[in-house]
Length: 261
Image (cartoon, rainbow, N blue to C red; front, side, top):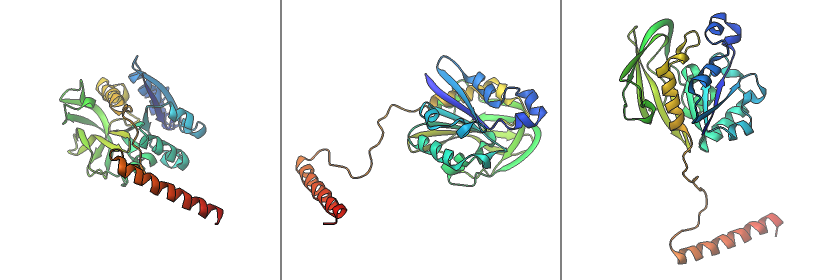
């Protein structure tokens, strides 16, 4: 069972009727309903909850965090961003959707401005699967259409993705790297472009299938956590003995320094 937390600002739905009409229970709930299964257990969290719903306890019980944000990026507490960042480095997966490209956590992980071209005109978006062998593309056709979406266009100011899985074309002529993966520490990150709040994108089967596939891909591996820092040799017993003596002398020196002797 993969434990997923779907995070959403849940601001547009409370302010704009056209958004509430499409997502009456919030974007987060639409995504949660669309991906929940016997293999995926989903909880939701929102901006206005204590600690934005992302307490240490919640994050420790989260294998994959899904993030949707737009108008409240600056309202996310930096301490929560640091907490999420550390969990990702320790192995929690992260899926960033649509305008989450400007979230504090995504920009921190990318180390770039993450800016792009955009136009809200309800244009047709055609998504091409350019890496069909990737697990995130499982069951996805070579190409599919989202009838109405916000346009995102290149240049997308991100580092070169570790893997590019989907590319979008818009009827205005722009193209966009719309499905990108990144590795940070032990964590796996997937950015997926579709999902403007005024369109019913998160009810479309292909979009939900991509997110479900990404959850499975981003879930923590069973690999042992790397050990870093001063490290004893593993193979040569003579070298190991010498190292242990050096370590003993170093610890004795530190103890003298601490006692002032």
